[in-house]
Length: 160
Image (cartoon, rainbow, N blue to C red):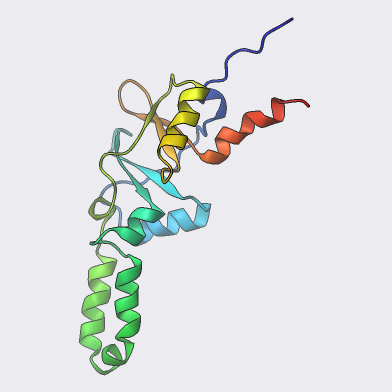
């Protein structure tokens, strides 16, 4: 009876990583998330080393971000802003000047490129809001990302 080799994170991760930089405008990073239908992207420095992660959750929940409460304030005050366009312009300029580093999680959960499939599943089980998880090498460079969807890939190997 032959035994299947152990599945590792390298077998399921996405190697072509789309990332953003800390000084990128938040609005541009939000476009990247929307265009690719991502829940989040790694934030890397010029050497591709992980410095954070930016997720949809970060953008709607952090106090300094383009988040839902900010948009609610703008919508609620639209009548006021119509009368006082300078106030609207100020609010808009403040929002549009935010950078990724203003909102990102600078202590992201990561997995080693040597992680097992079981360790990967455990990371998602133990950290419900995390998706995706950056995969890093021993020099902290991002070599891939793994999502909940990626964890489901090996299911096609199961036979009934």
